[in-house]
Amino acid sequence: MTVAAIKEYLAVPRDRVENFHGKQLVYVSWDHHLLFASPFLLCLPPETPFRELVNGPLGMLLQPDPDAAAIDWQHVEWLKSGQPWTPDFDASLAANGIGHKDQLRFRTPGLNSLMAA
Image (tube, rainbow, N blue to C red; front, side, top):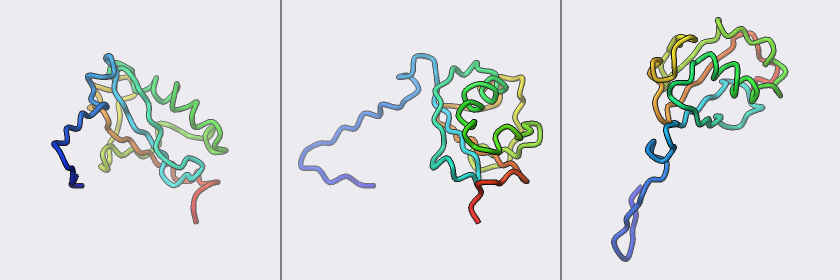
């Protein structure tokens, strides 16, 4: 979007990776589950193993959903930046190619107690 200003407009983005002291932002959303209105925003070190992301902060955030306990993480369908993707659960976020402000989405076919019609 263009900005119309009466004087020079200098925007300084504050969400650059350099501002997070060695951590990065990662967005994660659960497709077709409307209990969560928007993606979760997590701030994690790039060395975080993917399994730790799933078992730690993501698992805790998903607990309110009645389907959360039934998720079989080995059969989840993942999308990274809108493309099908298979994570290595034992590798770090960086080794999985997950960078600052990347968006991960996942689908759980068959688990849809709160899915939109």
